[in-house]
Length: 287
Ligand code: C2E
Ligand code: MG
Ligand code: MG
Ligand code: MG
Image (cartoon, rainbow, N blue to C red; front, side):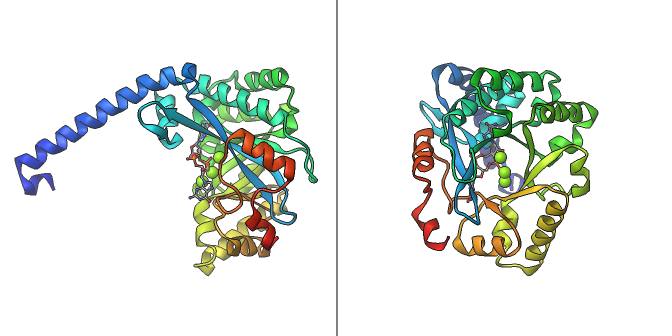
């Protein structure tokens, strides 16, 4: 495009790149201050037992409220934190805040709700990570069994022996290791038992296509059946409709997470949902 439209377009394009670079530098700078300023907060999205409609746990999702830009997506700033070497510090902060919250959640019919915390692949490079997790559990008093750590398939599969040792250290504590965005990386399920994966979260793209494409339906059904035969649990991500819930149930999926079942929400709102046991009135109607 730049070539066809000549010099002017080229100049706009370089201006644009300069702008992007400046923007990025500013975000890096601001992110370093954000922690101290209390601009980084956790929201929690409920994970629902699709049989009973009860809340089995919640995923902690990091939010940055930037003074000028408003809400900045973790898809943007988590990558920056990784690049500038802030992710270990940020990771421990998230872990601590998440465990503090979960410690106060009231028991549900299905037991005590767990908290699922996202972990960056970079955090698996740190051989001291399991010890950091252990200390956070000790400080906050949250039982290890109530903590799930979510990692992507590639973090686990490409991390080599060092990453597997860190995962073993986590599992040793009694903390559950889960694979996030499962199905997008195409690693075989049979590998998962070696790295002591307790569960998989089926990526939103599968849930999205369930009703439209019978091949996707068959594939998702097969993944769920195979996971269960290996004693691996399954949560479907990105549940946005009642029809998807019916479909997921029909192929043996017992848990789901998504906007239809509950939005990511501030800690107090989740507390309230846990107190009443109701996430969303709409779910009641179809449950
Ligand atoms: P993720 O772990 O796969 O989290 C799920 C994302 O899907 C969240 O986006 C959530 O808001 C969104 N989501 C939930 N239900 C639905 C739905 O029904 N439809 C659609 N379209 N989206 C849904 P969010 O909060 O923007 O986070 C994006 C990613 O950022 C997360 O993906 C995770 O990889 C990363 N992330 C978030 N918090 C942290 C953190 O504390 N540490 C690290 N390392 N990464 C984090
Ligand atoms: Mg996640
Ligand atoms: Mg996910
Ligand atoms: Mg996903």
